[in-house]
Amino acid sequence: MNNGSKEDYYRNYWILKKLRVDHQDKTPEGKALALKIDSLFDASYSFTSNYIKSNTNILSYYFLLNEVINDRKLEQHFEDIQQNFNLLSAQFPDHSYNYFIEERLKSFKLIKVGKEFIDFTAPDLNGNPVTLSDKLEGKITLLDLWGSWCGGCIATSRTVVPIYEAYKDKGFNVIGVAREFKNTKALERTLEREKFPWLNLLELDDKQELWLKYGIPNSGGMTLLIDRDGKILAISPQADEIQKILEKKL
Image (cartoon, rainbow, N blue to C red; front, side, top):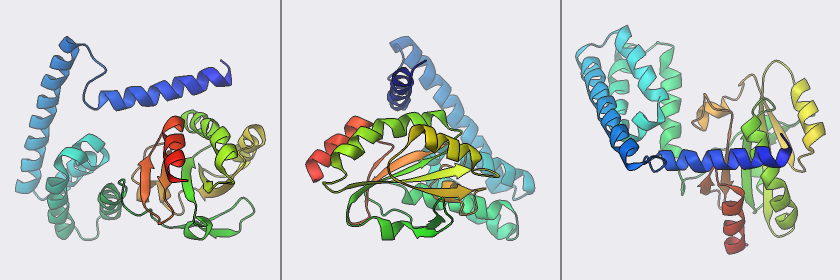
């Protein structure tokens, strides 16, 4: 499979993912069935939430952890999940789940279009610490969270290269952060092959916990388009969306 077909595959994947939110990817019959399944999930959530409220025990905390990992449940039941977390964290103030769930809930509220990006400091490939806010340089910046092991991330980054080349002198910037484990050998090979022309930083062994702070602890990566004032313009935009925004803003 050549690079172009990979890019087409992942572009279509993201389009399909957006359609799935409201079951627009299905036939009328399939959508009706999906809505029935949704009602069962909602009933399951209600049962679990009521159990947690009535039983502040370790099993309840395990149930809550599973709810927090699920984006759909967070979207639909955020306030209720927050209340259950407050209840259980007060009961178990030293529990190992507390930090993860608290950061997950915080990121779910913060990583939204119109909100400010989360600043951080991470090393470049030479080990020099770089603070993201210092590199925004008054430009519209695409923050590219990716990894050498994430095929979809690499395919997405490839689609950004021609846009970067076309707009880098007009006020557009890209900063990559690679999530790697144990060492940087795979990252070095990937960058040698792909030759992404922008600054790349390193998140080794989740030392900064950036993926958790950006609300994607179990994901390969994501992109965020950030304006000159540090506000999020778009989350995981496709190449054509980025170009439209740049044409309007630059």
